[in-house]
Image (cartoon, rainbow over all chains, first blue to last red; front, side, top):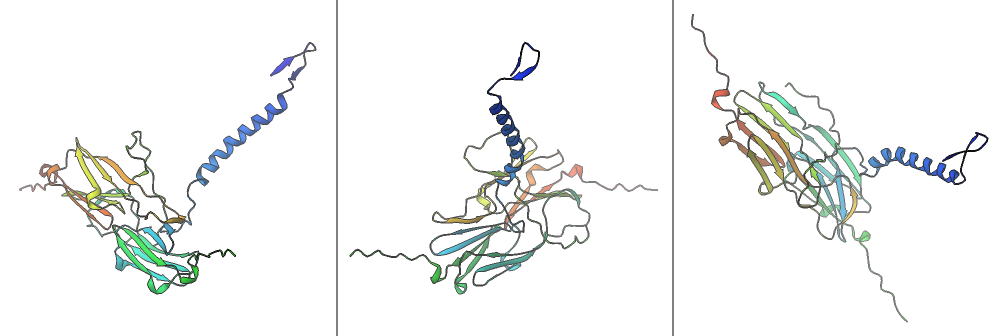
Length: 154
Length: 135
């Protein structure tokens, strides 16, 4: 608010320092909104394939979406605490006279290694691929399973 | 198309569908990536729909609009806790307008390994026929 004084000198009314701050805060919010909107979405490693890792008491479950790949096309290997997945995705070769309207599916090689939070029992790992979703079940090593400690009362 | 370059696959986030009509059940909706190509006899559509079982896929053709609608069950069990989550799961939905050229009774659909293959044969009248000119 600008008050015109008798001397014709425009000044601002007292509450204005905070108003100024309010304005600045609003501008900064507008600026950062553009940035934070994408950061708040899931952060990815940026490597194909994107994976979800979940765990329960006994196992780690690793899932990846690999449509069009059968079990034979995928190479999976597991060491003490990391899992490596690699392979190549090919689309069926179509006839030469085909004219493409849209081409959105991708093909090529992929290879990715993920570290697991703790050791796994490599001997008992299982992997299955159905409907284009690869699921790897890795049982946790005995040492990394949570163990209950009973508190003795004396 | 000759051999495409064998470069590494890039990770791509699934594209979410921002549709004006809301779903009746809450959840994310994605548009599947498709390849559409045309030969003399038919149009073939390939769509990436991982996690969709054949029973959960609805293909509907109504007034020349082809609708692909695939339901996905979240694969995680009830006790599982997330460690890393890089992609979300949700149903797939996409619509296409077909021209009159398709013989709508002979459409063939196959869903295998998460890829849908839709074969849309062209109507007889639309397949180009060579007319030989007699001299």
